[in-house]
Amino acid sequence: MGSQRTVRAIAVSLVITAVTAAAVLFLGFDRHAAGDGGAQVSYNTVDMRAQMLKNGDLRVTQTFDYRLRPCGTPWRQMFQQYTLSFDRVTNISDISIKGLTTGRVYTQDTTVHSPGGYGDYGWNSECAGRWYIADITRSQTAPEPYDAELDALTPNAVGEPKQTKDVEIGWNIPSTASANSMRFELSMTWHGVSTAYDDVVALEWEPFSALNATPAARVTGTFTFPEGIGESNSWAWLHTGAASETTRGADGSLRFTVTDLPGGEYINVVVMTERRSDSAVARTQAGAMKRRILNQEQWEAQIADDDRRRRARG
Image 1 (tube, rainbow, N blue to C red):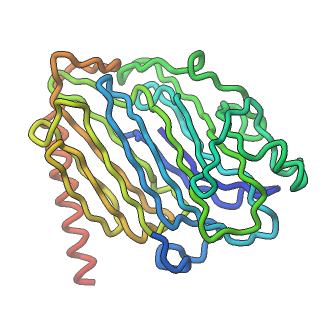
Image 2: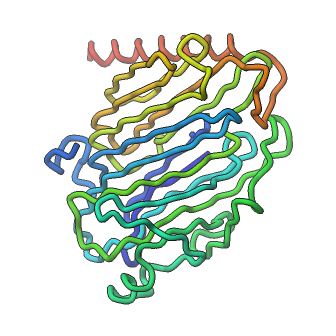
């Protein structure tokens, strides 16, 4: 599932950060710190929490701390774009957005307002404090309504007819010339993320893809499992080219920290659990997968070790 994290000024999208989420699914210091690179938009920090549900869906909560530098026109709209897919993420629902800096809870709006069509007073009084979800499959400039109950895709297995759909989740902020820190919390449920094989249930959560253009000084994340799954019957791996640390808890949870994440760098989490008899995962695929995934992760770990040694020698 692809996603783009972006902030809009009045007239143009100045920064685009792309994320492939669940495909395979941000402490302030001096705001010119490493990882920032002088970008007009950057993350001071990002914190991400993903809770795997019994049916294989993900409940995702993301906390963003933005730094917005002056760009000549006010910043007015933040948004994320996702590609829903029959074999990865089939729907997004239960969305909530809160401005942590102000304590304002954003309300849903069925209209996508263009930031360039208002003055500051009109935008702040009519549009700010609202969020939307829209279908942008046909056009990003002419979004169409998206209804989570009516427009979800079917979680088909690999090899069946392909279905995709592009959606955008955005929220309108008050006209802002610049900000050293502006914090938001976005929560939502991603459906159809996992695939149940004969022996395991597997998913991939990729909060940042290599298309990401917005740097982050510090990224922290936690992935947790349903009750009954612990460290002994689950596996989790972090993939990134940036400096990182990981730990696993007794409940199987994976916690990670990535520092100085530049634009163009990815963060990917691969997760696998033993399949239980009461599995309620909607997408199923015949065949065993556990050994294949373990072998793949072992191979990728060796490649990463070899790359680190080459860079150290260089």
